[in-house]
Length: 234
Image (cartoon, rainbow, N blue to C red; front, side, top):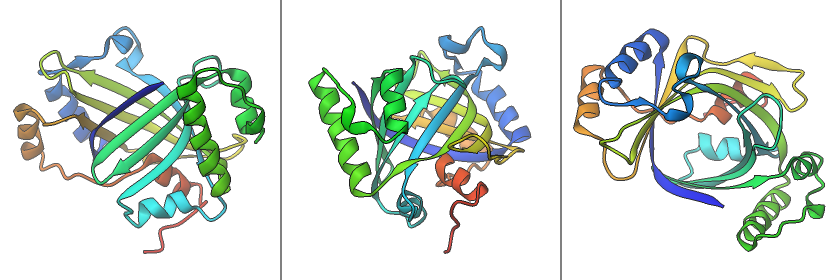
């Protein structure tokens, strides 16, 4: 099981502004080795989010609940192969906690078909993680509701090992059966700044230069709105 905690600051920027900032960032960071030889230095991300009929996770985010948890299935291709993960993402104010386990293709389909009681796991940590998942999704009557696709550029630094930046774009929301889809934020990119203790001084200068303002944004919430599964009533 993989797990970590960190701070995540998010910025939504017009594509042309983000391209300028990316150019400046490259003076201090480089693309992750995983994408150095790929087109556009990016990789594809597909996430399936769990939600119930009342859209509780959506409204917890909209209402600014300080501590909240949601589950998702994540893969890095448009088909679900052997590289599939079940993830738990929790947030306590600005601090983000993530845990995830790898799931087999057969267990993935059991989850999607709501046949979770028949899933067999060997590792004790994975069993505990999965028990928590079953408890929450059963208690709140959650099910796989929405698919979010996007491309991600990951940037890292040898000098600030706990500081990472990802640039996400081509955000698309899809229904579970893939029959309904919509392009979200087509002229914008989302920059996520991830760190454990501090933001480097050089990036603080970029924040000041471009007068960047943090926003509270969730790709899950954006997708729910664009698919008209829920709306912000505030």
